[in-house]
Image 1 (cartoon, rainbow, N blue to C red):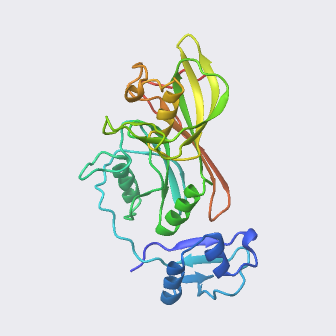
Image 2 (tube, helix red, strand yellow; image 1 turned 90 degrees about the vertical axis):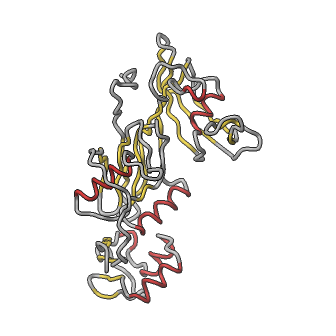
Image 3 (cartoon, rainbow, N blue to C red; image 1 turned 60 degrees about the vertical axis):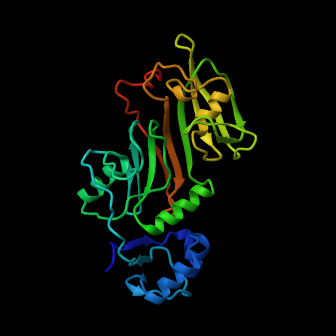
Length: 295
């Protein structure tokens, strides 16, 4: 039984490469996966079983008839989710604040439940595959894979830092300029969920740039990008500068908002199959608005 076939048009950049080189060196497909596809004869070029050593030409159509994936066990919840980008291989969702990305036990109101309902509305029963997460009370763009092959590639891209994620935050007080915060982060032994800067923690690096400040409100709009991906990293690092995020009571922020003012604003990467530059900007979703300081 097969899932929907994966179809990829050979880009002119790959003209002359053998399929073996494209899969192994460009897409870094595992030896185990390649061996399985060879044995099962599930990869085709222009509708014929592929010759792994015959050079490709731009415009050739590669088809992978993948094994049917186990249907998702996540209970669909029919609440619309905002899709920012979608094709046959991946999609990007704008997460509202207040939602977990994935359910704990039998939760039914998480982003995954909404994504499952969205997929099923398109007669798609495949597994929900997020590439990264956001804190429950952080909003913004999250990347999903539509099949195991794209999931594996996007995971490696995230690990290799070729997927750029930019966050916007409103910090308490007036901050100036730009800089890099390089301070290790570890667990806080006195609190079950809080993190803290710790000499024995894991390496954590945040780059930040002030976009604007609002002296009347004692707030600064900051753009942050992560060189590492530690839990609560931006929140901990901004607190370490003496400018915790507004609304972030866990880290000493002012109580002016109902949640920390942190939004995953942009997601940018080169599409692994089309080689197009994908750049998505996530609109703000809060009602009442948090980022209405931005003009």
